[in-house]
Image (cartoon, rainbow, N blue to C red):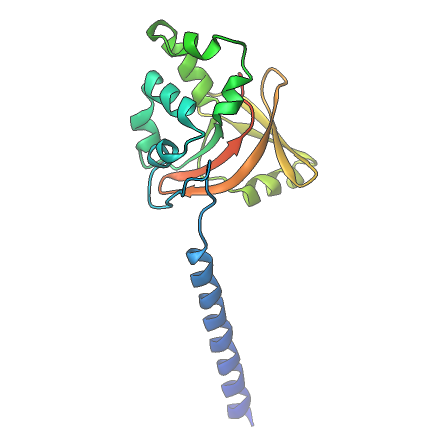
Length: 189
């Protein structure tokens, strides 16, 4: 009887393990969200994927102007809150043109690194931190500044140092060196 019980338990454990393996295999086959209609490859870096997204051209140009391409192509991992071209268009007229000038590189770098958090924070991680924080989570950027995350309905909203808010519109775009969350406004320190 004991032997039969052990055999049943062993079969049940093996079945559970195989089922879990199948679920994980299917999870890894799920596709990454698209950004601007472009496929994002989890095996590519943040810079490679952003360069393929037609709605992140301003961000890519700014990253190049700030000299951050090598940083965002490095192993990381990083969590990037990536503003779309439309997000940059919300800034006062002429702001982007002024920021990409060589004499404004330090300011541009500070703004861009304000969109980057060290480590890989998925939407599940961020929502968990918000819940554990009683409704808000403080994220420290690589610029050394703080962002505040909260939930608005089912969406994550990021508040910057000036009180500006940006909604996360696409979550968990996996990269070889981190994760990107697309946002609808530029964050300002």
